[in-house]
Image (tube, rainbow, N blue to C red; front, side, top):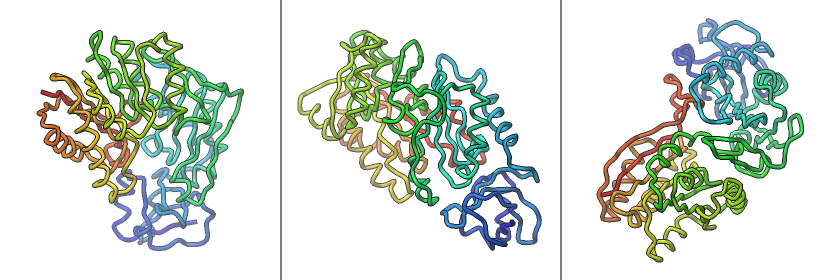
Length: 389
């Protein structure tokens, strides 16, 4: 089957942009099952490439290749192998790795994280779902994972007309997945936690913040989830306080801290982050370092103003509690929130807090979460490191 795009719309696809939106399509020549691989052609009929096609999805076309080639097990095996080769030597000090990062690795809608010998997989669109057996076989062969689980419970799946899926894919899945990173032993519940199990993308920022810690410092970890920032800061000598509304995440943090001999250095507060920050401020608490790392907040462009208000309120409260010379990392995992938006929110927060601050660094996602120049959507993690005067 062929899908014809409007005149001029083929240019971005030929320039390796992976998305063909509804407004780009001129006509579909025939009926295709959701997720079927189709030939994409220009309005004049010239071959452009091959793509997953789901006529009922907000993004009907998801490009796979600009070649006339079969999309089979060998195709996916080559893509996974290329993804692993891209990461070779670029990620150190950890047993955990993002193996496939969706469109950035040429497999639209597939996220795969490896934790030791356990693989976590997320399948987000109808095309990847239709080819799930081929994709899983390629991942299993390339990684050699002894067990794997699926956490395909995303909003993207619902938009594609797919039901949520989770469970064991192969092997004997342990009740608790464990892996080592930077000398700490982390753990999480594979089928009970959020997303793919653990936030690998904050690895570099965890190291950045822990390097600032001196013995006896007080460290505040807001929206902590399972407390990766708290644990590494505590190991560096800080007294850390993790704040999150997810009771399961905090119980996981408690167990992990105990297993690493850090339980006396890691405290926890369960509750809504902004309300807990208000309580801490009223208690007169003071900190030397803090992280403000909320969930996505902006899943659409229209959500950005509201998200900025949350960043501003949270950052202002944190700034009022930071010691002079203290550090604040403000981070967003939302593609639609730009670095400029974080800077705006931070400026407003500093004004409300009556503090001045220096921007020490702007960071992005680590090497195993590729940011491809021709795919702007592949950039999602942005962080500001501030030093308060």
